[in-house]
Structures are given as C-alpha cells and as structure tokens.
Image 1 (cartoon, rainbow, N blue to C red):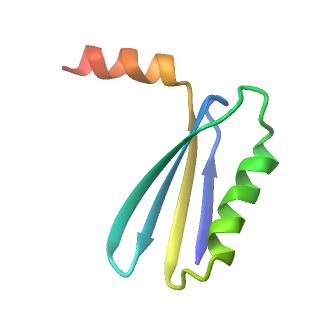
Image 2 (tube, rainbow, N blue to C red; image 1 turned 135 degrees about the vertical axis):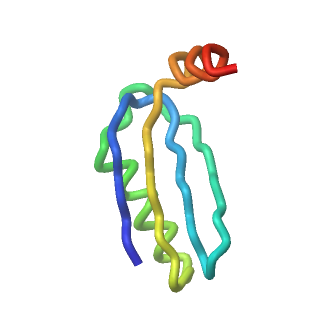
Image 3 (cartoon, rainbow, N blue to C red; image 1 turned 30 degrees about the horizontal axis):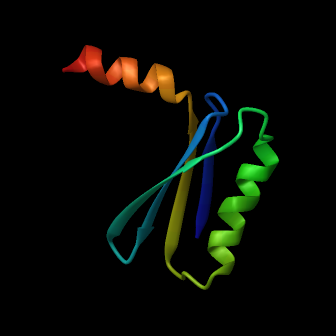
Length: 74
C-alpha cells in the first residue's frame, strides 16, 4: 500500500484509489485553510478501513482553475 500526496492548492482533494485493478476516484471539497497533514490523515483513515492491496493518490486542486482548464481543453 502506498500514499502519494501532491500539493497544488487547498480547495478540493481528489483521491484516486486502485484496489485489485479497479480505479476509484473520490473528490472531497475541503476548506481552503485545510493543512496538508489533515489531507494525509484522510488518506491514512481510508487505509485503516481495511482496504488491502490498495494504493491512494491524493491531489489538492484549485477547483476554479481546474474548471477553466477543462473549458480551454474542449
């Protein structure tokens, strides 16, 4: 099991989980002042829920900039 955290901004946390070859993406809206350690704590909590053979990638994104980039890419 591995946790990978990439910090961008602190508006939303995207958690990509891979469990037995299945990819699950979860998005959590979080407060702009949430500290990086709290987000890592969320990942550790997911691991403690008993998901074996699971990897987690957590990215914090600026949702406004993310939406603008999606519009530009269309």
